Image (tube, rainbow, N blue to C red; front, side, top):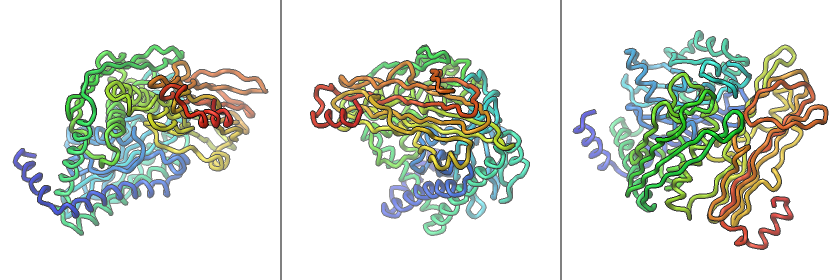
Length: 553
């Protein structure tokens, strides 16, 4: 687009009736939410239907984010980068979208997260012209690879993690492309669920398309596009104003990931420079990419930045491309947070993304300590299991909550999916109905939250028993050696742990491991608590007494 055309569009946007502009923008936000409902209702796998491990967004014809649902931060923050990368890949091959198509991609170096996250794109046409995109991403519980769940803790390169799909037509002329479905089915231990979940994603995008076209039909394409320009500019203006309210400064912070042996050896470094209404983040000095699945593609790194920016400014600002404009990011290529293909990345999406959020929050905490909470549990605590039951392969995946860090004016929340994950647990009824598993305990981890004026939230204890047969178990977690930090004098939260119970013998397991389970075995997942905020001596005595009564301290 020429500079003059952009000026004309912004002029049209400023002259648009503000009420009409707000209605159009809100309609797109609710279209994204409705997309998510359609996916949830149609999905086959418990991970999507019950845990809501999916995210939806609307983009304009230029590939700019214009609206998103309140879904999963690590998905949502990577979608703009992933869509741009996918569009560039297609353009390099002179492939143009046509009406009635949907495209699917899961290559992390294009789509922006990891292989389990399957992105489906619907180009939206009106009167023969491309006007927008409906896009969603959903975590498929198994896409092949070395272990059930497709996130092997010992993966050294991407190829061990599962089926890699470059952009492929999933729907042509509004008819499913069976050859593409067959590829996904052939490369999954649970092919029926892959079919159902892909069809659910198609339905989600069709819902988004229908709402976009209804809005255009009602207000006209010129008004639709002018409202988008106005919404993007408004979000930029509000973001810049919120940034100006934060203190300026130039700070350097660091944090660590625990390597495959458990040693806290992988360092992340960040220099954050805040000047007026702009922020620059420079990750120079961060560890080089590792021969392990902890590398995070650039889209994942961006998602952590966008999440924290929203958290420390104003969460009521509509999330769209305008929010990103005041941010400059530098991540050296070949490092943990911007690896070269084919580095393994499955854990980078779930674990390294959490540590990056900790890191960016830590940097803002140096500038504005009175508004940034203590560290949360810092791990998605991934559990993957699978085997064959009565001749039928099965694969189970879920993340587990932890303790939220104490906040400046409130306790942390107990047992919650914090920061980069915004999913639910899998209901016990769904687990025991669909898998040969029993849940033998599900409770708060006593005394796991850090003490403080505002205590840290407690972690969780969740125990899975294999009811029959054998299964492969993979665990991928963090914060087993390095505790979540307290803030302003608060104490650290307690670290997490894994335990195998076999024939009444308890054996400690590593944070990142794969092992074989036998019928009757139980694996106990204990997640980390959040750090406390403020000195424990400043805590209200009545609250301290309640904590002791409830077994929290």
